[in-house]
Length: 255
Image (cartoon, rainbow, N blue to C red; front, side):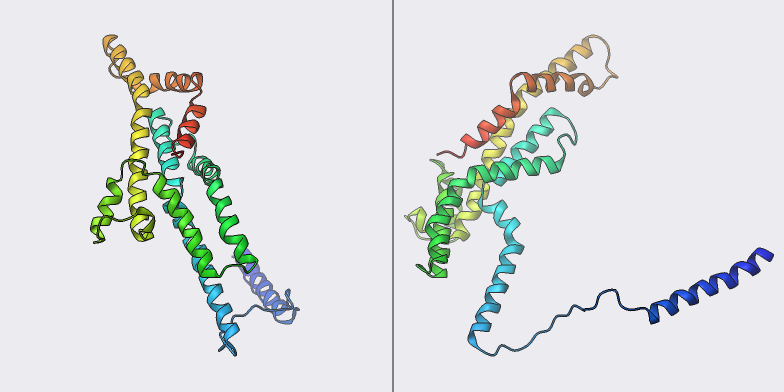
């Protein structure tokens, strides 16, 4: 009880000192932040506000644009198939797979980026073309990249052309992006699953050999994945697996 009688006044005193110091102390930051909305005084301010709004919208949609209109989808799915085929659970981690996919995407898309920079961005910054013309040229370049990935198999593109009710025959370059983008995504998923199937075959053979060997030895209670995992990793290293997978992914985008 004596300890309690001493602690209670002490806590009250400390609280009073803290509150009093916060009241009389000078502020740490001699400024404040604020946000206000005011009506525009001239058309230039309105145009600048609209441009800022469009820029923020593009930044918010940048991840979706990266996934839908570049090589990222195929690369990240194939790398995920590779990790599942090896059976290494979360190794490499998701951050490593996504980072590798991003850099491979940048490598594959570098000619397209250079073309957009030369034909759209630089002329726009030099006031040789308008913003609408720059967007039209950029979308045409991206559309050309996506159309090249269909090759001779254009059934996915024909599917969305029919679903959109567009009269045929039609030139693929004249199709709108709302038709090309979903067809491109379906095509990328199809190609990625084909590559993933080919990746699974050698590792599946190792799993079958290990499982049959353990069965013949009467070791049915031992999970085959524990024995086959080191052999799959060794096979992957011996054949230069990362080189082969990277080369396959990069060359698969060359028409």
